[in-house]
Amino acid sequence: MKELLNFSIKGRLRRRYFWIGKIVILTVLIILFTILSFLRGFIGEDILAIFGLIALVFYAIFSFSLSIRRLHDLDISGWWFALQLIPIVGEIQFLILLFSKGTVGNNRFGTDTKTQNSR
Image (cartoon, rainbow, N blue to C red; front, side):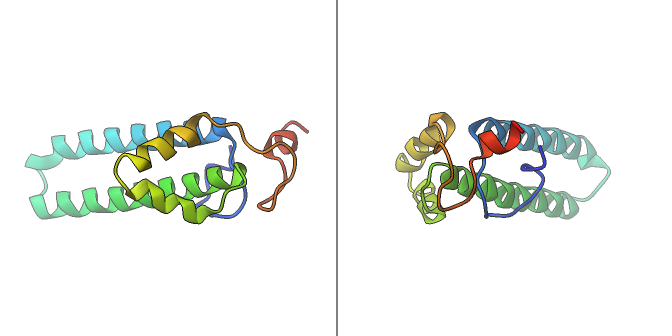
């Protein structure tokens, strides 16, 4: 699980941890925005907007990190992440990231995370 707790774009990330990371960050974001919506009456709209913006930036950075490392697991350069910014093409690439098996054995981005974690 330590693979999820860093914001590095180096190394590889297994499919399982990619799923877990996406689910956890979306759950945290939903809970945070729910709490912020309840606090709307107690704090100002400006402060609420600032907290929301900070949460979205955190989500974007974390999601970026997960996607880059997942691409590395498929032995694909992280620059291909830019495709996710294109409508329709980005969704197709995201589905590929979700369901494709990673490279077996070592690749140019690091050691095989599956065999590394099973030791």
